[in-house]
Image (cartoon, rainbow, N blue to C red):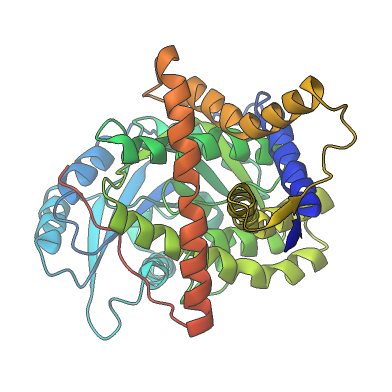
Length: 427
């Protein structure tokens, strides 16, 4: 049996080249509009909370001490917790009038993060309509909803650094970088830190120029008036990646999304494999769900064509890990003599040292770019002599996406769509 890998190799090379271009663009960073420092929208921080007693105390303490002259509020939505979460939230609300709580109960509770956020959005809308002084009489365009997970820790001046981006009335949302707070806990947590820092400060900075920056589930800032254009429940019910889905819908609606590289949010990384695989399966399945946006994006006349192209590529290129894994498996079968492998990809390069050099460069370029970005922006950079081992570990870790992709595709075929909460560690 003969298998030809030429076409697959060309596809993977084009993808590598695409991300290398993003890497080059990430060295040139956009800033907020000039003279926008006086822009100070009211920041309403939404904290979805379901059994978060291990981390909620520290999160609320952190949020209460943020430094921002424009005013900020905190709304904790308890999603039918069975631990001390409501007690902790209520205690904070009793001593700080900037903090409010709301409790969801069955059967409405337990339907996933999208429904919790929609609940919070409806509350804010109702309070605004009723003239609640908690919102200082602000207009919807002057209120920004900030999503911080219960394990999130915003950098102290993050609100002040993001606020100027909203001086542009066309900006509907801003995403900030994400770091793993416990990156030094073990090797698995460190791999997640490389992943998040690499994506935030490589892909997101570059996409900020294009106008296609994506939203994350943590550290997401969205203008209330932009959310109102999507209806009373802007987060799509049943979406496993409600952040990606929301960002795509805003862009399709003509809103601009930005990435703020000036600040970040810390969150917990998972330190064991089972919850990590469950979490990533949900993420990749949610990514596949968002393929429903491919046609609307292609037809969206209000979105710049380059941003549309980039977002379509971003949605589709998730299959790259499957292609790479396929080449590895086929190569292994060829080495064992079970199949005959042909690949004419590098025929255009002279045989010998030039061809081996090009092959090596293409092999190490992706991990080199990611680790280079990580070294520039991480709070936990590697020592120089640790980099070869880190590169090997991160390359191996990347094949996790192949396994979870198969699980996600199986879930889609079997129509399993359960939202599973990520477990927390004691803060």
